[in-house]
Image 1 (tube, rainbow, N blue to C red):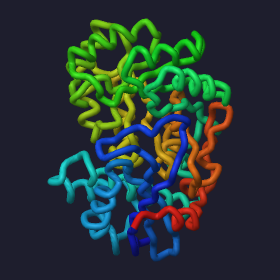
Image 2: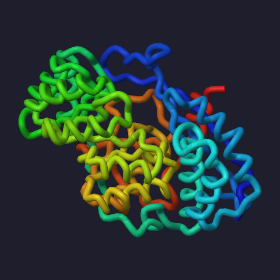
Image 3: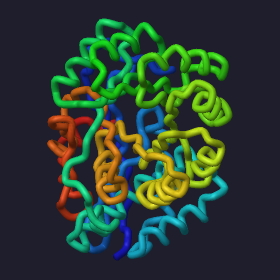
Length: 364
């Protein structure tokens, strides 16, 4: 079976999360961007993947079009790991992180989708089989920056069945009401998205320790300051999570050997897809580090993450952005009910992509 066409498709869908839209360097974050990667074959089977989007969407789209697609079209890919290893070798001069890796992730996920469809098997079966039909899921709240809104939407998420809540807050004043609203029996995590320099990160970790965090995520800038992460673990005793910006299994090994991580969070749409995340998970298991994949997506990357968790991570949760989309090409496949997401059992990703929704929200 040969690849006949590779097409990146960027969509941007309006969303609501109950508060003011978070700010990004170039303005308010008003839409959820998803970069779909469609791969067609001479067997008439189409696969769908996802490359990391959000602020990187247009760069990743260009990487697919200009760099990765020309290396794919016309080639057989019956052995996906070997095919992806060959692409990695050909593109090594472009680094092991960033838009090219994000583009490779989109190809990888689409190829697994095609392979599963050809074999009549879900991806999790290709990986060894699902240990669970439903994956416990935590509500990943967007940043509100206002104590009353943090409390309100923490309570709302708990009311919808979530038993673990992640806040994207930078201040004690906005973390505290989340813990108060949750009470002692709900897990609270805090993701700062690298908000603090080293000394401030240590000081803030000490202040936040009183709130019994399940983990403090990406607490320091730069993102690869593993020395400071190790100090937070060692000197403060707050669990540290990171990994969405780790670009390959070798970097993951370095972070773990440095003593930086309690929780490793590889991102399937950043690290290079299913093959690469599987290798990174193996590294974490060798080092006894818990894995909680990063997955605040609404496309095939989220679904692929469910398959990987089901097959490889019996104790992991899935991350689900706590917001409502105006529409979704994946329908109920991205729904979370009673704090759980369902593992698809159809061939490949096991989802149907509504191309009418894609056409409606497509970004030229």
